[in-house]
Length: 339
Image (cartoon, rainbow, N blue to C red; front, side, top):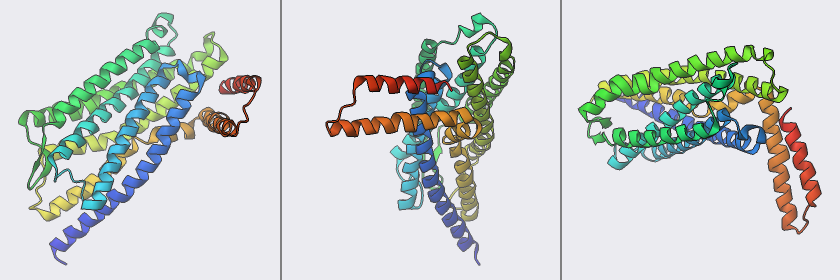
């Protein structure tokens, strides 16, 4: 068997792998992030909680990234590659959107851990520092920075005949190699998220000694456990891809070397599929490791979404439910949220 046929076989396998994993991760990501948005926006318990606000923004960013990945998957199904090496505009847009979503998601995870550390601290003045109003300001500034950063760096990508969609600006290559991947989306968010999640966990272990309402105590324990598992997954899923991107930016493989190019594409497909899991896993981690979150998901789906759908159907049939029944049901739902 010639090396050409082997490299073609590897490329074909990498393409099929990318297509199947792309559709699977999009399906799970869409379901998980939509359910996250429903739970954290519909339950009154979470509406004034800073961590829930950051998780909501993270879920929106994850959804945008899922639509980017499904676009790449559909193009791979059509062209047998993601078409970034064919169209200059798409080459730039892919990295603009991808880097914007990455920065938003990573630092929302960091803000979640920081907020949970301060909100569970035994010192009253520290607990008062992280407010929902401050969280909105910080999130707005971060998103603006992520968009501007994505446009500036993403615009430095261009299509090369033998290399495909690569960074061609020398300053952008140096910046990505020595700051963006190793620091901005690598070491910095990992250190911040890991440190503050462990500190928040330490705070929660001492929370029994503080005079707090039992509802607040349960919520702090629940969110701290969820955030800690999210950070562990974040570290293990992101670091391999970040390391790989640093290497490929500095040592791009030309298509004139079929075997090396095919192996590179296969490694890229595998590491990318692992990396994308970071954008879909938060809901599934929460539901696995938090029994209380499972009950809250059931409450939202059964008592809120299903009941609302039934009410709309009754309304369409001119069978309007009396106001006192609606108020009774709402009060029952609010009491169940605190369980």
